[in-house]
Amino acid sequence: MSRHQHAQGVRLGFAEAPDRVRTWAGRQIGGELIAVTDCVGGMSPGPAARIGSSAGATAFVKTCGPELNPITPELLRDEARILAVLPAHPNLPRLLDVYDDGDWVALLIEDLPGGVPDVPWSADDLRRASDVLSAVRPVLGRVASNWVPLAIESPIFADGWKLLADRLDQVDPWWAKHHDELASHAERAVALIDGDALLHWDVRADNLIFGTDRDVLVDWGQVRRGAEWMDPALLAMDCAMSGSTVSAAADFFAEEPVLADRDPSDLTSLMAAAAMTFAARAMDEPPPGLPTIQATRARWAENLRRELDKVL
Image (cartoon, rainbow, N blue to C red; front, side, top):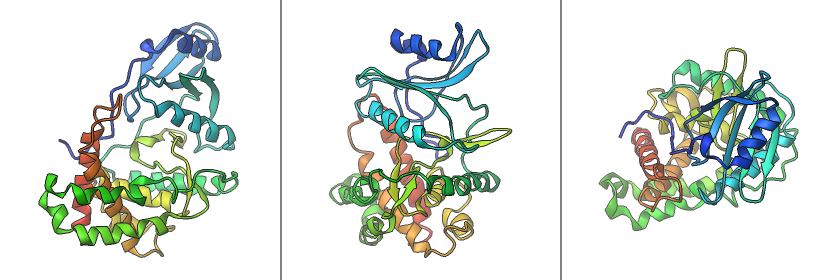
């Protein structure tokens, strides 16, 4: 199992989406649908594609129905809700239209030429991503923050780590050796994440598009309210999750302006909570349509363990 790869599920091709969804997408961009490029990446089982019409219009479409995964359509509805209220900004994606027949949901979003940053993170790409977060922070501060608080709905940090205590005989002995210290760190996480700032809450390399003219933070289905420093902290944590040679704690956390005044043990607490949850949940049965998620969780847990081993 490679330490260095983006999260990637198994998506249907756009040609396999229901006719009604494909007809809607073609009608919305105008002209005959003549170009479809299926996209990979992310954990959704639903189709995602860049599409083009005979009139020269382009867009990105992603869609899912409950028969593929019961949660994904709700995430798309959540994403549509936040994209509809985000103001125009070069680092934010523009929502073009939404399809929702009660079962299948589809989002039509502006086409964004470019690609995701490579993992493991390079220092230059990490700084570029940090600049995006800094640019969107004041914009998010102007959006009404009537979203679910992290302290209420964030099992990865709030209590998911408790699962590992009953599964220590199924994981590497390192987890049992350090369990009490990790649990002490993880227990701090709920207080650390609490706050009223609007957060993207899914900051990872594969949720950024680096283009020639603009860099854009995409995939807004996980929006929550919490501490303002959490999105940059998640970027720091993704360094460890992706197996980066850039140390999340030493080379980024201490230099990032939003994080520099925080105790480095705060990041340790977040990583401990997430790592313990991923290690435990890697042994779960896979949710519908997500056959690769356990391997992804196991990889994230192992990469976080490597980072935690430097500071425990």
